[in-house]
Image 1 (cartoon, rainbow, N blue to C red):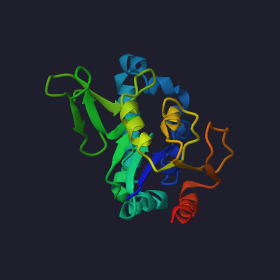
Image 2 (image 1 turned 90 degrees about the horizontal axis):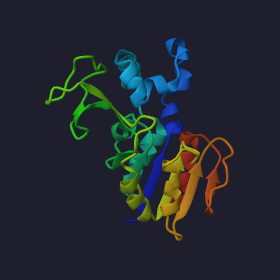
Image 3 (image 1 turned 30 degrees about the horizontal axis):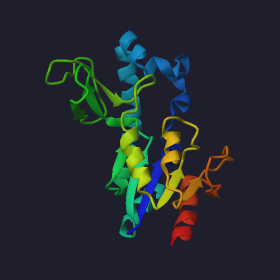
Length: 225
């Protein structure tokens, strides 16, 4: 069974109605993203950061996997599929994908502020001031913030090295360190890139499908069938 490794980004979740920080508008127009997504922002205003991620959780719990999520899950019938996602939602899992590596954390989880190995599922949408880990420390969102290391990159690189087919969907390979994963693809591996916009050249030959995630996935499946 061939190994299909998928790198997914925000363009996949967007088609399920999940908005990025820039698109959330309203109250959040007053803030810079670093105020809600950095260690410095957390230190300055925990209430604000908790409220921001609570709103994102509410949004996620009302969203549903879209066709791109579902097709990727269905490909497990024919391929050994490994998803590597930059998204913090759980839509790949809810669509049925069984191997999902989250590079930037998971929105429905929290972790200890003194022991990063203590990670907990969040029941519902709310994480509050005063919610603590077993060591008595305040819980924070289990998200990789600006300025923090993306610890899952080495694990992701090992998966990419094994790929017979490498698909990039919903991300333009401009965001590092995830964009650097392309350097670990074997020379014999076929690379596919699905994006509705023109993309900057990458250092390898690849098949470009200029379309949205939900429409482009159909062309991709036809190409590998």
